[in-house]
Image (cartoon, rainbow, N blue to C red):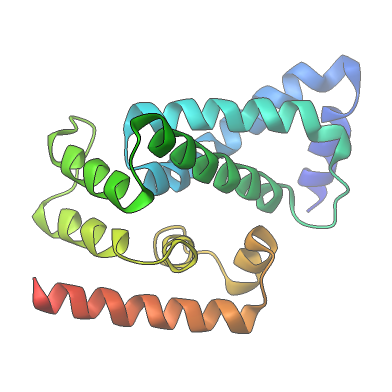
Length: 180
């Protein structure tokens, strides 16, 4: 927590801002990339969204009040940027969000950056069938290994609601995997 406070102070001071921002990017870029990648499912799109996320973080760091952890705040920005990106992409393609998910999943198989095997691909397809909130909760809990209180900060939802969403998500994924 002290390191985060120090980093925040450095980010808000003109003479230390550039070095501190570089440290921030190096500390969080991989975690944020994979969080974004699990939402947008495409490497190039994830890179674009990650870049937009860091631009927003840089522009808005002075508005960060410290009510939550810095990475929770950045995860919230990354999540919102990812969802906005998907909404915009489906609108540009003239398709709804379900059709977009299907397209992204089909492209995942041919994506040279996808390193998963058939089981991983099947899991991604199962996750894609979930409602948006359950998908986000599942990804954060299962892949990012975040605690419910951390997810609560990011999604601004009660811990009880998150536990219910995660439970429902795991049941739906389990059912999907048994069917397919």
